[in-house]
Length: 184
Image (cartoon, rainbow, N blue to C red):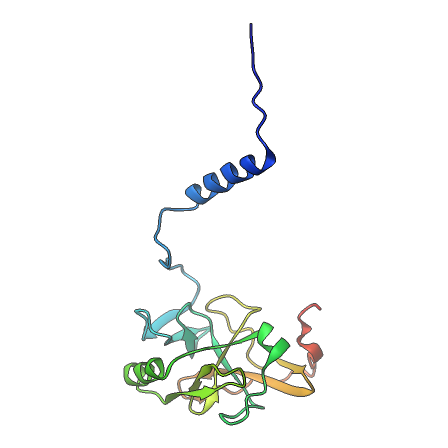
């Protein structure tokens, strides 16, 4: 009996494996999303809007288009953006256009605008507070509320943005999280 062994280069095997994995991962179109039961329920907005209102852990909270809770930093104001450089590795600015801010204000009947960041981009602001998502939490979570950290010598206290204005931070446990407890 004659048998032959086919020897493929590792690169070819890697490409075949990647193609098979991509095929097995789904047949949805790019940018499509699915919903899951995560304890959050959208109440307004949605439909591709940059921001909407959702109940996250029983709190009526502003969330990004992908369901991440939006936060503001007490240390900032529209004229004084302090979360730059390494801070934005953990707290992603919600980049938006003036048109998106107007659409959010019209749809949600809330006060939205854009503020200019030091890098020249424009960031969505709610009631004058620049908005961020927290990279250390998933969609429909509220882990960043009351979180404190320091970047470039600035102390930040992060508060979830709620529809009644920026949320109050939860009572302090007395444990400051210098450096954010990010594990670095």
